[in-house]
Amino acid sequence: MIKAAWDAAGEVIRTWATEGHSIPIPGLGTMRFGVRSKAVEKLEDVKTSLISVRRIIFTPNVDVKDELKNTSIQITCLDEEGNVLKRVISGDSGEIEDNENGGENQNGSGSEGGNTGGGSNQGGNTGGGGGGDDDSPIDDD
Image 1 (cartoon, rainbow, N blue to C red):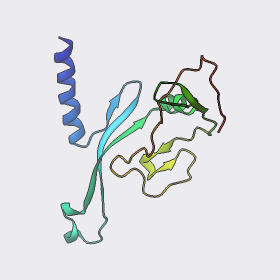
Image 2 (cartoon, rainbow, N blue to C red):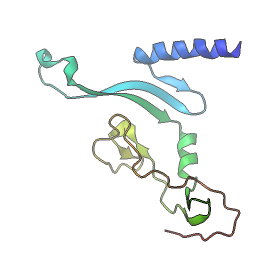
Image 3 (cartoon, one colour):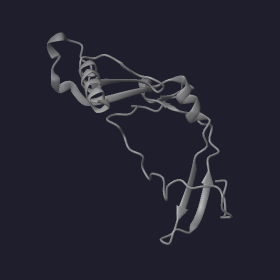
């Protein structure tokens, strides 16, 4: 019964989103589909080849942004045996990139281009997150 309800909701969401509507996701934010394309001055120059990428755009609500901003990030580097080699804890300002505004963060200073097609997290989180309950060395950098 629950699976049928989720399947039906998924169909409605997919239909709304592909028709250009924003989809509210309760407690999280809104989602919509969009495209990046080149601008042209003349109506006769409009064509589908101007589209460079299709996008899924998620706009988190204020509570989610605040939670992310106020959450410290911990990176733990492990060796092959699972021993902690290094642990760092974020000391950054907690700025959140706002892809809705061409890559600008919430304070308005921009990075050109925004997120074109999802981007990537270069380097990633080496070793994954870790607990803070052992006596392993902790660095501040």
